[in-house]
Structures are given as structure tokens and as C-alpha cells.
Image 1 (tube, rainbow, N blue to C red):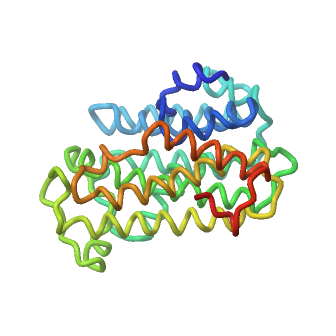
Image 2: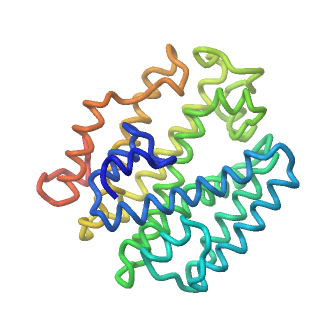
Length: 291
């Protein structure tokens, strides 16, 4: 997959953090991780696009059958055919694929996430599993549990950041993906509707979610430190870019809606290059510092 082909992917928007992260990946890792993210996208679209829950469940049931065919090396969909050609699939992968499918089913008609446990599962099933499978398949038989676990933490951190960035749009769609307990513990108020910028009484809850994202990213970084990093370059870059994005959102949340807060292209490219070089051991940093 070339840079132009990557830009055409429905899940890796040109100029996004994941776009720059995957630009620095080897062709094999780029193809595998992009395909995994596209699978998560297709499952989510099957859950959210139909007008009725019945149609959504029918589509996801088909995807359940298709994932079973992927495990048996007889896929029909162009995406699962790509996944089958890119790497071997074993029974050990079926649990994570099933979690992704369960996460998509739970998206049907979702209005509120009520508890921290539900939020953790939402993040794990939507981005954590896709990242974990990407890491596992990129390393193949050399994959170790700590590396895959780091992929889960990275995916969960990314999902938390995106919950903040999509906060206003989710309100428009009738969704609140931040538990009420987070609003209460941070001294924030439950939102009535989207505002520009985000209401000052709501902001503390968004900052708390960003803090949790940073904690997840830090866990991933600690698990990856001291390990051969060549195949991990795109994940290391994504980690550094999302850490920087979280900080930028905190700084600008008082004046801009979260969906409009982003790193400039120049900053993104510079940080992505620096993170990639750090992963290769060509830039020495202290304790994995990517600043």
C-alpha cells in the first residue's frame, strides 16, 4: 500500500495522526494494520448506518459468518480476502474478532454509556482489539503477550481521545459516551446540547477523559520500552502523536470545539519523523520521552 493508497482508505484520513503513523510503517505492517482498522470501520458502519436495528443486526450477523469464513480461509468480502492473503488466522485470533463484533452489536441504538466498566469495554472492543490484532499479525510467530497488550492500551487511549473529539457530534446524534460518574467526580455538569466552545461546566469531564487516555498511552509506552522497535514504528508514532494531541486539546478547549482542535501538518510531520527515529534508536531520549 502506497501513501496515496493509504490516503484513500476510509479509516486513515489524509493528514490525521494515524495517517502519519502508518506512513512510517513497513509495507507489510502498514497493510495489515490498515486492513484491521478498516474491518473495525466496516463493523461500526454496519451497526450505525441502517435506519432500523433489525437491518443492523442482519448485517452484523452476516459479518459474523464472514469472520468465521476468514478463520476457515474461505472469505468472500474483498476486505477479508485481503486479510486472509496478508496473514494466517488461527483459533487464538477468534476471541479478539468476536470482541470486535460484540462491540459493533453494542453500538446499535447506543444512547448512553453508564459506567466506567462499559466505557472500558467500548474502548477495548472498538480500537483496542484492532490495534492488538495489528500488532499480533505484524509480528507473527514472534509476537509476545506484552506487545499485544501494549497494542490494546494504545487502541483504548486513541478511542478515549476520539470520544472527546467527537463529543459535540455525539450529542447531536443523541449519544453520550462519557459515564455520569465522570461528570460527577470531576465536578462537571451533564450537557444539555452541543455548544461552541464546549460549556465550561462540561469541560472538566472531557479533561478527565483525556487524562485517562494519557494513562493508557503511558502503559503502552512502558510495555514497548527496551524492545526491538522496527515493526513497532507506526504504533510508537501514533502514541507520540496522540500524546501531543491530548495536550493541544487541553490547551485550546476553552476557545475551540474539540473537533476543530488538531496538530498542524508541519508539527505532525516533525513529531512523526522524530518518533520514528526514536523507535529506530537513532535519537536517544530519556525514559521513552518523545517530546
